[in-house]
Image (cartoon, rainbow, N blue to C red):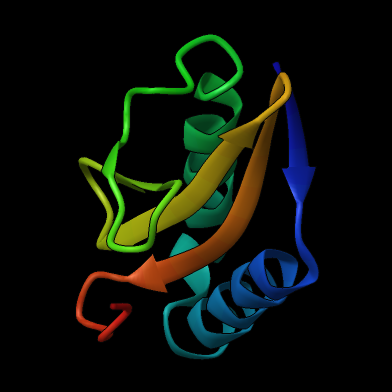
Length: 91
């Protein structure tokens, strides 16, 4: 499987990084690295996330961070759609 980022997902990750850099600077880089590691794991285990609210989507909650990676699988590609904070209304 390959990973493909959508523009909204890349924007979400940039927002998360900027927010953490301004408010919790010591955690910004490590948090982004952990999110990337979770996304990379989808290459081998694309169905590990739970079924999403929208048809054809899946959500992978991060076990140690409050983020949910929203994605879909199509033709050997895992497409990252969004990265939401668990407190956000992402439905």
